[in-house]
Length: 193
Image 1 (cartoon, helix red, strand yellow):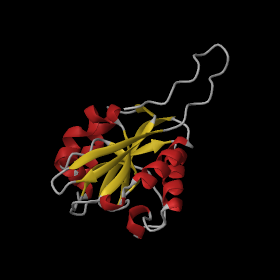
Image 2 (image 1 turned 60 degrees about the vertical axis):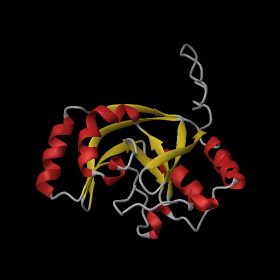
Image 3 (image 1 turned 180 degrees about the vertical axis):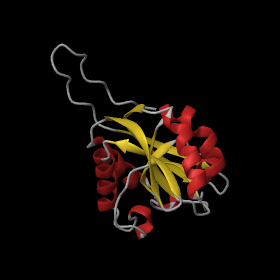
Image 4 (image 1 turned 120 degrees about the horizontal axis):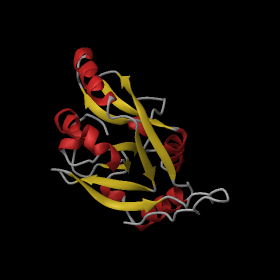
């Protein structure tokens, strides 16, 4: 989520990455405003999303259908990437995350990714914002020994800011994985929380 000051009623859609917490929590708590406000390690699907006042039964039903139309998937984080003043972990593959963002943004064009400030969708797990290159180099060097990180993504979480902190508002399960090849365990059901 963005480094801007968060406001009551703002919402966002994220994919939680709890497996990254041990490696990134201390950095994020100090250097990522969303962590300070209660957002766990994550990759943003869409921020900002609709104002919380617009989250009615129709929106929730539409989100449920959109997210369920995408299969659960696995991610790996093997390296860091950089955007201007942002150090992040690079999710591989990025395509399923990008597809989720595009699907939600297509349904709600009034909520474009990044508020319409950037045209390219670059899925990422933010570690630090607003740091100079030397600080980013130091953080990255400290993280490299803790990579790769593997994660299974089975849901998208709707977060809302209450004026003080981000709170989980709803969890939308992704569809089931495709069946495994013969001789391997079968498909894993989508997680519900």
